[in-house]
Amino acid sequence: MDGGAFPPRDRDRIDLVSASEGGCSSADTLREAAAQAGKAELLDRYAADYPKGPHDQPQSMCPAFGSLRVGLRMRRTATVLSGSACCVYGLTFTSHFYGARRSVGYVPFSSETLVTGKLFEDIKEAVEGLADPALYDTIVVTNLCVPTASGVPLQLLPDAINGVRIIGIDVPGFGVPTHAEAKDVLAGAMLSYARKEAMAGPVAEPSNRSANNPDQRPTVTLLGEMFPADPPGIGLMLEPLGLAAGPVVPTREWRELYSALDCAAVAAIHPFYTASIREFEAAGRTVVGSAPVGRDGTAAWLDAIGQACGIARAKVDAAKDRFLPAIAGALAARPIKGRITVSGYEGSELLVARLLIESGADVPYVGTACPRTVWSDPDRDWLEAHGCRVQYRASLEQDIAAIGEYGPDLAIGTTPVVQHAKARAIPALYFTNLISARPLMGPAGAGSLAMVVNAALANKDRFDRMRSFFDGVGDGATAGVWTETPVDRPDFKAKYAAQRIAAAKAAEAVGS
Image 1 (tube, rainbow, N blue to C red):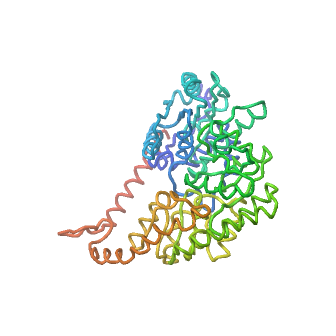
Image 2 (cartoon, rainbow, N blue to C red; image 1 turned 30 degrees about the vertical axis):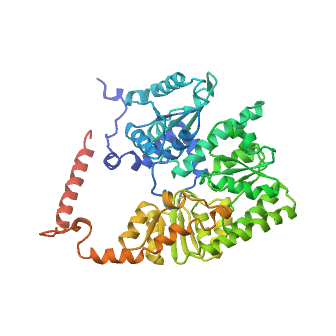
């Protein structure tokens, strides 16, 4: 056979590092593949909506957990995942661990169905079989990393099947930095769909609209998940302005999206919902940053809402006169004394830091995995004016370094931050379960953190006694009580590392 009949073949190469570490560690490879597969525009939009840096992205759970949770919380909504089986297992396990009570659909794939395009046909067939209008208003289909990198075109799915809306989104770990922002990916996609429905003609009224706002006052939509007691509390503060609290986005049913869009203004309680804000602005709605947290925050927020909604100054002042003294009194009644560092990935870290400072705490550092946006600037400016360093896109290393730098009496943060602090006999609280699961807004939020925070601060002596009791038992590989204490052998590690490098080079030569 003529040797020139075929083009020269490059050497076969296996990315052993990525293969051994798993898809989550192959971000650059997957990102490049996704761009080549037609997803470049999507990745560019994500890069603009959810900017990374100064490092690649925060250390957090799989981002798709956020969008999955949003879908699972909505009534009459089915959720289908397209991704590697291990990813789907982990996501469904975590979702059910956090209380999901419905099934998650899954479309499996093989190398053949992925590269031939049959995976898309399998997804379409699965959605067609699931689209029962008696059961569902909406079906959400989510591409995870591998289908996104392979260019599976969910945008080609029908907008509706049998009257059931079809929402297709890509939530790759290499394109969406945190699970908090993945909530915005789905919320924004749903708002976009609902906005187009409303523009096309009359839409159905939410079932609870009249009950929540019987006199049909103009509403303020609340953007970002929050403690269930906060929206009613915000509604009480809006009442003297002639306004009512609207739906919370992400919503719990599809019809609430229409009410969310039909508002006088949007309160970006969580300021990183960029895609959702884009839809609200496209609908002509004004977006207000920050939140009614503490005395100063509530005063500034009421002023901003009044200006956005054209409320007379006398009404705004009357509302402030009614609520600010109560907030100040509640803060004074439950003071917090001590130095506290704050970090987390929920998006409300700056609000918590503000409330702690107004309660009397010294907060020199707050780190958030979310990015800086113009809607978080009011909180950032206030915190920096009160001596607090704000770190957006905070890495675990930065949060841990802050503990060493500031020597707090209490560290509030993610699980590894809490672990690091407690190992150094510093009291610590897990942000998600113990801090964000409390009211923060208005009079109800004032003093709400004091009980748990002060109880933790009082544990310092207990930690010191524990550390003294266990002193000398070692740590890491030497932790525990030994007849013969293990001895670290770096020479063994070097030997095995050399063997791994040699094996990698040998494998690289395959096909040469």
